[in-house]
Image 1: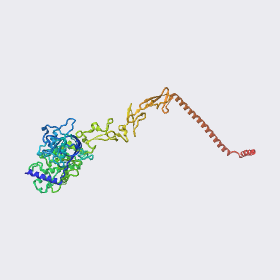
Image 2: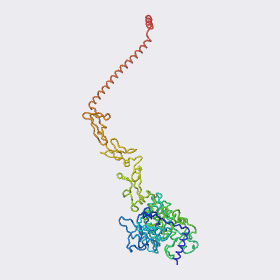
Image 3: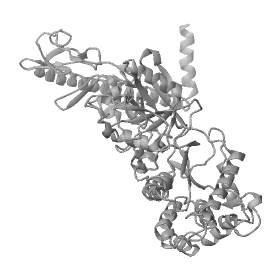
Image 4: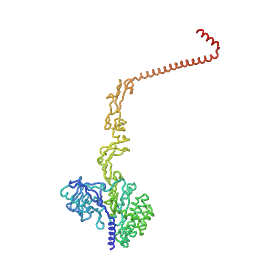
Length: 621
């Protein structure tokens, strides 16, 4: 009776919460039919919440519809049917009908039969729904974590059209496309992990704990290097006012019915209560907030991992004391965490848990969070297996092309399309330069930047260096050759031009000019011409010397004699000039001195002597 009342209460809480806020968004990808012509087009399909969707990628295959076991509720081995592709053949997308068994059972049987993907055709006309995993208590679910093929639900009308084409003998070729299933606007991915501290809910809880352990390393590296912004969240319900005094609400809720969680063992008479889970969830939220304020949000992963190992419910260690021991071991401020948690017995709202309830409500393109565990990546709910590789693929699909971290380009996550035929992009093998850029979604053909110089072109057939320093990159695409230790280049600032001594287009070839043969050098009488790589040598026979500037030969001896004669002439001229200058100097000085002496003597000579002289002159007149 107690268990029955528990589930009535849980469903009342769930339905009330859902009826007030319910807006579940079905995450979709596209399915493109390429043949036959009558079905060509793009159709929507809903991504299953199990298996491994190829986020960021595509898958091409041929659709097959079985003649027997059309609902895939039994093993195809019982019908001797196999869908394993032969070498070189297309993968098989197995089309099955909805009904009679769980979606996961259909996928498991299809996978074991060799199908690459499963398409489940709805059995009634309705909007697309999300195929989810079953309740583990009602079925053996050991295989759930082993489902690796992607799955999709298609509408009844589309399924009927596919069946009809196959019955008519047409080859139905399709392409499942997940590239736009997640937004990828920039170089950082924001993602949320909606989880629960409860570890007693069967295989689903076990897989959740295992995921946290496996994904911790990758998550912390991405967070520490700023590639991601991670936030953990926890779902809580509230108890309807009419049931606040009931045993169910008191054992499952804190803060007077405001925040509740189901009983872990589904039995009020033993084990832990739902309110224990709520308190531990609150502790984990507060730990993240305190760690985030200290600049170390990744410590949440350490705490959750250590708590699951050291404080499991099965060992009766799911306690406050054990939790606080883990917190101390990680060096996180316990006082701040306890202050953040507040009083769980107070008849008032807890701001932290109230914020968690508000966050559950969908906004914009994101629907309400109703399934645990759930990942929300770039505001879109992740669908698929909770597995390290599968989740990492989804996160990598959220990065803008060419901005994803190195972990997204590892062989385990994606295929490097640049390795085969260089992705069809331009490349220069000699310089080991390529325009092929590997991204998570595929390759891009984009001319690279090398040594600070941007290469320009279409990226497929041409990439050329431009601007300053272009000759440093592949010699600017110009001719270049080294001969006897000397390098010759046709690269100039504004293009390609053969250097002096060469002729050609400057790009593919520059040939040595034979100046001797073309008679452009050494044309003087007696000159001897010898062609060299990129130049020439001229010489003169006998005792002759070649003068390049005059293109002539002269005698080495004659030149010496002429030189000395010229020197003697200069010296003789200088001597003559010196003697002449001295004679002129002496004459000028003597004349000057004579005139000065006469002037002085005239002052002392007798006047009569002067008068007599004057008289004689007058007599002559």
